[in-house]
Image (cartoon, helix red, strand yellow):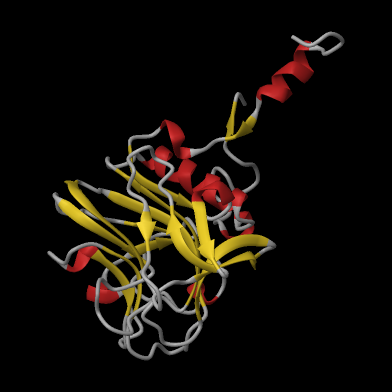
Length: 243
C-alpha cells in the first residue's frame, strides 16, 4: 500500500470499471481504444480484435468507414455515414462459434427505413445470423433484440435514432468463418447508416446477471446509463472491479 494511503482509499484505488476481458470472447472491437484502429486519410483500414483471438477487421478501398473522435456523447466511433453505402469492416478465417453479440451504435439513416441497413452479420444460415433493419420497420426476420437493457423488441424505431446498446437473443449456429461489422454480408448498398462504437461477441450464453453486467459496462462507458430501465442493477452505478 502506498505510504499515507488509508485502507479505504486503497480499496477505492483498486476499483475500476468492469470490462469483458475476463470472459470467453469470440471477438471484441472497441473504438475507444485508439491502439486497435488503423486509418489512412481518416478512413479505417483495420479495427483490431481485443479478445486475443486475432479476428481483426479490415476494409478495402472504397468500402472503408471513417474514424471520428466525437462520434456521440463526446466519445469516439466508427462512422459509416448517414447515406446509403457499401461500407463494411470484415474478418475471414478459421471457423468459430459465436453465441451472443453486444454493442453500441446509432442509426442516422431514414425513418421509416428505406431498404436495408446491416449492423452485424455472419454467413447466412438463418434469420438470427443477421442483425439488420429492413423496409418493414423491423429487425430482419422479425427478430427480437434487447435495446438499452429493456425487454427484447422487434421494432427498433425510434429507439435506435439515438445512441443505443443492443444484445441479440440468439441462438447462432456454429462454424462461422466471417464477421461483417456495419454491413449485411456482401449485399450491395446494405451498409449501416450511422455509427458503431463497440462490439463484444461471446462464446457462451450469458446468465441474466452476466448480460446485465455487460449492459452496465457498455452503458456507463458510452454515456448511455440514463437509457437503462429504472430497475436495471446498473442504472445508478457502474459495474466495478473491487467494489
